[in-house]
Image: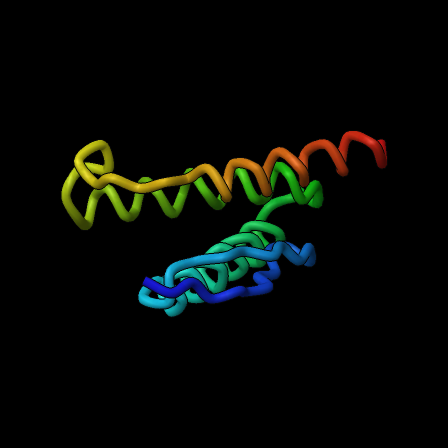
Amino acid sequence: MSKVSLKITIAGRTYPLNVPESDEEKVTKAAADINKAVEMLRKNYAVNDHQDLIAMSALQLLAKASSEHAPVAQVPVDYSEIEEALQNLSTDLDGIQ
């Protein structure tokens, strides 16, 4: 299956990803959902730290997804690229402080 190269922006940071062509729409929608959640949390709570907002958004979105669908543990997903991007973001944010 062919892969497509994407540049996904989450909380103002751009991440290059290579995903299967069939997952392009899902990944783009997921990034949009994360950005909506981050913005909603930023507006409603006194939190401005991007790392905190992303973590809170991830928890909120995963909890919502697990209540709407089959338990997350039963869905095989490779989070390695996302984990790497989040680790890079965390390292960059640590360097700013």
